[in-house]
Length: 387
Image (cartoon, rainbow, N blue to C red):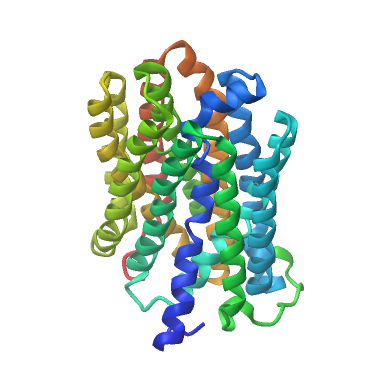
């Protein structure tokens, strides 16, 4: 994919749009947690397993998915993964039991591990020198669109029939799968690579890369992962409906979508290291304020700023990952994203039970972990300046 002319623009647009599928599948369930609890007769803590079953296989396969796909051919892998993702999403809609629902969530997460890093790697390979931050920012904006669409769709489902939200998501996935075969080019569908150096994982097991992975995990476990707690604050603390919580989360998604490309420009000027430090510090401070947001309007206002800050963190560490290992770019991105979603999976298990006991403790702990992430990224000494 050379990215030149109208054909290149069309192919690149499909790649950007595909970026919304991961966030859509992850977050569509957040506004309808009470409805899922009721349908399957489970507790809030047990609902955390529905997030865990999506995020853990997603994170685990991300460790190697990008590198494997570079050997198998990215276009071939993308087409298969998006189609199977749509099938798994339809299975969520039809789930007669919680066990069925959890197994379908495993399928969603597994397939998304072969979608998100491959789309981003293909896009960044075509980026002109000095413009990686802008490309990553635009892709992150599409991810943010998925994040803002997910709560609206989930809120609609919560107030009508939660299964409809998964039906719509499955239809979107199927449509993208049909469009992906039109994407062609050397980066996305070139010949299989020889396996003389299996998986090239050694290039990822270096101190800077491992510290970046730790930063990503801590960020997701801490301030970046509080969206699920915000949704519970709206439903269980303030008493909002599913649609109202969807709108509340929508505000944070709009802010993130607007902030992502702008932050990409800032990142190109500042460098990735400074951008990560600033975004983590700001986001951690905002998360520490969330326990005081006891009305719908105040929660919406704080989360609007928080949504922008969390997306700035994501743009920053994805930019660092995209240049950290030039000879294994897809592998580095998938390795970093893996640790992000390990963090989200860990947070789903840890913070939901803590929130049920004390929302304040859950929020403040997330903020403190964000400050710890600053230490690890400084120690990595990675940056995007000069790239």
